[in-house]
Amino acid sequence: MKLLTEIEGERRTLDVQRNGHGFTVELDGRRYEIEVYRPETGVYLLLAEGRVYECRVREESEAPNGYRVSIRGRNYPVKVLDPRRLRNASGAASGASGRAVITAPMPGKVVRVLVEQGAQVEAGVGLVVVEAMKMQNEMKSPKSGKVIELRAREGTTVNAGDVLAVVE
Image (cartoon, rainbow, N blue to C red):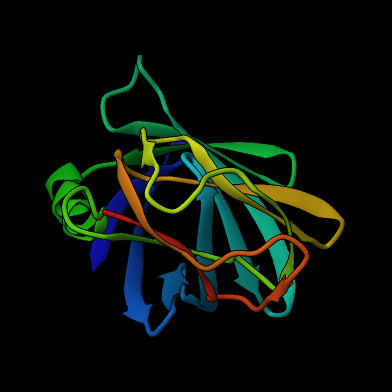
């Protein structure tokens, strides 16, 4: 999907293609192979070339279709100039209806399970805490619903992409 964006005031075309569990992103002629994990709303872990980057994204209320993207301590103002494409693409993959599968963002150890199978949860509620690279990451429910499957067990190790819980 090609997006016309404005990054730090400069118009740029961003080409994003889904590639298995990750994405191929092209910006300014440079191609990046990236795996993306979302441990919580507005926070993304980007795995690229063996390195992990934490990326925080928040909407800018004063700029329509504007966002503030923070990576490695630097803030970037980003504006999507063709927001219909972004809205249509994200709506199809959001999992607002149906099942939401919560997976481990990277290899680590389950240090806490915060819910039980069968529990009713609200969107944004923590389900499982995974420790990876000396950081604890709380995996939150992306939607309100019932925990229909809970595979995480405290003390067990998990691989990137392992299913921890399913909310329906």
